[in-house]
Structure formats: C-alpha cells, structure tokens
Amino acid sequence: LSSWPLQGNQTNTSHCSLPSDNWTFTYVPVYVMVISVLGIALNIFVLMVFIFHKKPCSVPEIYLTNLAAADLLLVSFLPFWAVSAWKQFEWIFGSALCKMVNVGILMNVYCSIYFLVLVSIDRYLAVVHPLSHETIRRPKFAKISCLLVWILGFVLSVPKLINRELVPHDGIIKCAEKYDTIYATSEYMILVLAFIIPVSIITFCTVKILQTLRSRLMEGGKTKKKDKRATTLVLAVLLAFLICWLPFHLLKIPSRLKSAGILTSCSSEKTIYFCEQIFLYLAFFNSVLNPILYVIAGNSFREKVKELLTQWDRKRSSTISLTSTRTTFLRSVKSQRDIVY
Image 1 (cartoon, one colour):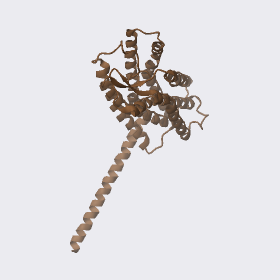
Image 2: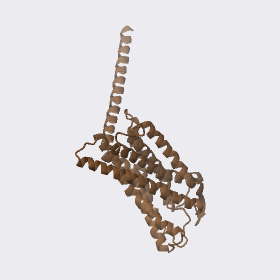
Image 3: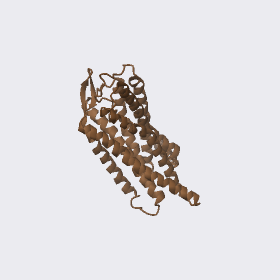
Image 4: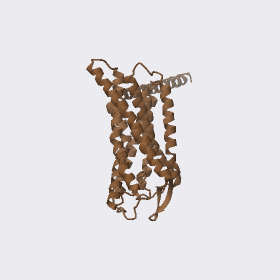
C-alpha cells in the first residue's frame, strides 16, 4: 500500500518535500498512539467477553470474534507506525519489523473485509433463506471458514513481505517498497480482492436482507427477535466499514494515475499524499469503532457482558466465602489445640 507505514516508498519527494513541522509529523503520531491504545483495550475487552462467556458463541459471534482479533492485530502494530511518523519516516526498528508491520496491517485489510463477507452471507442465509443451508450455518463450518480467511490473508500479504526493505533516503533509513512488477500487482490485488469483490458480495447480501425484511414487514410477517438483533449489529458494522474504508480505496484511482506519470505536478502529488494520510487515519479508526458498535447496537453482546460480570462476581464471592470458611476452620483448630495444651 503506497501510503502504509509510513509512506516510505520512493515517490518524487526530491521536489515535493514536506517541512519538518508538517502536521503529519506532529499531530498524526499522537492520534495514531491514541487509536492504538483505545483499539487494544477495546478489542481485548470484546475478545474476553466472547471467549470467557460460559455459553458458546453463535455463528455471527464467531465471525465478529475473529474480526476483533484482526482489528487487534492492526492496532498492535500502530505504535511502530507512530514512532516512524514522529521521526519523519525514519525507520529504527530493523528489517524484520519493517516487513512484519506491513504484513500485519495488510492482513487486517484482507481478513477484516472477508470476515464481514462471511457474516453478511450468514445473515443473508438466516433472513432470506431461513429454512435451508443449515449445514453452512453451523459453528464448525464458521470456524473452518475463519481459519481459511486467516490463511488467505497471509498468502495475499506475501508480496509486501517480499517487497518491503530498508533503504537509505535523504540521509535516513526508511522502510520502503520497490516500484516493480510485484508492487503493481499487489496494489491491483488490494483494489480487486480487498475491495471490489468483497464489497460487491456484501452489497448483494445487504440489499437482499433489507428487501426481505421490508417485504415481511409489509406483509405483517414476523422476524425472529434474535435474528433481527444480529442483523442490526451486522448492518451497523458493515456501514462503519464502508464509511471508514471507501474513501481510501477510491483514492487509489488518482494514486494509480500518479504512478502512471499522468499526474506529475508537485501540487497534485501533495494533494494525493495528504488525502491518503487523512483517509488512512479514518480507516484505522474503524478498528476502534467496531467494539463501540458492539456495545451500542449489540443487545446480545451487552447481555453477554452483564452475564460475564455476574459470573465473575459469583466466582469472586465464592472465593471470598471459601477463604473465609478456611480461615474460620483454621482458627477453630487452633483454639482447640490451645484448650488441649
């Protein structure tokens, strides 16, 4: 990704250099660190609720759990991004992390969108075809699908693993990417496989879901309360994803024109660069927004939180009661010994 950590690619910066006090070197690192801290805390909270709750996760919750894991992967790598931005794109973390950070962030792009594809298909089958495809909508199938998505995400991120390297530039070392066939192929893969195809599938499923719910409402039919709640949460997460990621992917069009040498002026390059930065930070915010949506739009998730807190409170009370009983017993034994002796 041409604007990913941290621009580093050898664009025509020789005649379009940025001043040292530019906002991308000052405010951005603070913003990214805040997103990282919030994202780590919120996504760990979501994972704890889904994993430690006594009831097994439903199929949509399995997909949302993996989505939270993908978001956690992204925000865990952002502190390296922030430090590099603060040092005006200088990379001080070595070659291995240069590759790992980029692969980890790109894996989030692929995995998160395909987890949303899976959850969209599940809601489509649950609402539009509720009496068929029961085999596909089983937890075992959901877990296998998630594993395949993680594998696919890593495989599609391999070009970044190969192409990222440390290069000297303007007296500093940058984590940069070579502009070659691998780079061009990777960029088109991201556009097609991480945006056009999955968004088309999600759009189809969403339109069919909304049409079905509308027709049932007009006919006076009933929709299961559980399915309605799950569908509301899924639609909220899908909408948030599109709002956060759509501008970034659409900006690929002028970026490709720049790479093709059509947009060559310094002003156009700077405009594309600043838009890339703004849209990229908006995309990063999606990893913080998802856990918030679980709480706001997810009635089932809020119930799980309450049940989990009650569960932990009971365990705590039981532990305190056991400790108290043990202390009382030991005191009784001690007093009996004192009477005997």
